[in-house]
Every structure is written in C-alpha cells, then in structure tokens.
Image: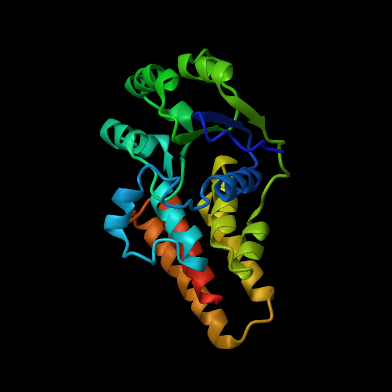
Length: 253
C-alpha cells in the first residue's frame, strides 16, 4: 500500500515492474490523495487561480476533481520529452491544490543530457510537486540517475503479471476500457507480438461474438483499414493499432 505523501515536502516515487494496470491504480490512488482542491486560504496560488475561474465557481461540487487534475497532473513518456518541456513541468505551481503530480514513464530511454539535468534537480525540487518515475525492469548496466533515485525515492515494485494475449485485448475492447485496452496492446508489442497476429486474433474473436451484422461489418472494416494502413506504411504499426483500439472502443459504446 502506498503511504500518502507529506504535503510539506516533495516526494519522489520509483515504480519498477511490468504490471501497467497495477501502476495505474497506484497513480489513481495518489491522485485521490493529492489532487483534493483546497480552500483559497490554504492555497498559495489562489490569487492566480481566481483570475482564471469566476468567483464562486472555483470549487464547484462535482467539478472539483476534474479541474484539479487537468491543472495539476501530467504524464509523459521519456522519449517524448524535451528539456524545455521537462523544465516547465517541474516549474509549474499548483492551482487550487497544495501539490502537483508529475509522472515520467520509461525513464531508461532518457538521453544523457536529460539524466544530467534531473540529477541536478532531484535534490532541489520544490515542495509543491510529487514526482513519479517509472521503469519496466532494473537494467544490467549502471545508470547514474537510477542509482540516485534508488537512494532518494520511495521504490514500489510491481509483480510480474500473466502474459497478455490478443484475446485479452478483445475483451477490454468489448468492455469499452480504452486505457486498459491500450495497456494490453503495449504489453503485446513489448512481448514481440506481430501486428498481423494481433489483427488476426481480433478478427477471429469478433466473428465468434454474438454481434448484429451491422456492428460486425463495421468492426471488420476498421480491421481491414488498419491492415492496409500498416502494409502500405502510412503509419507505424503500433500507432495504427492504437488508433484502431480507440475506434473499436468507441464503436462499442
């Protein structure tokens, strides 16, 4: 169980493991704890936030959590980050809450200049940020940033999960769980599953399901379009299949 971070100091987490769904549950737990809107008297940025939201609407009932997350939660993949973007994310102040939550995934893909930058910042983070670093497994080679994080971060290990297959992907699509389906797809690619096998398994699964003819044809059309997109090289296979998964989930709504 994750102990809630203290709101008086920055906190660094290091997630280690393959179970993406379990990691997402931990992140959601942190969101629930951290991103609770506070009153203006407790919020050092309240004057700025009042300039953004009309008076009386800043802490409106059911909308609190949604806007708190939109302003105070960010997640990045290391390979997508630029130094200016990373620096900006680390420098932002919370809006309506006491701390922000920043998640950086696949940190072993950082280039050396990113690692040097983070090594210089880890010991000097502002008190208003919670930082989560994520890796799939511990590398065999020495990594200066990781060595540092193992000393200063709260390390959480996630058990290895059962091997995902394309039928798990079809199941999550039928449940309309976009995030879970994309996580299964990512697992399949990490395991070296070929795109044509994924498409074939989805096609087989859909033909077995008790769907009306119109829905079945729409799904098959999406599968065929993705297959053509991949074979013609219009999009990389992983991106094309991610788009397919999102479209199939929407089709099931």
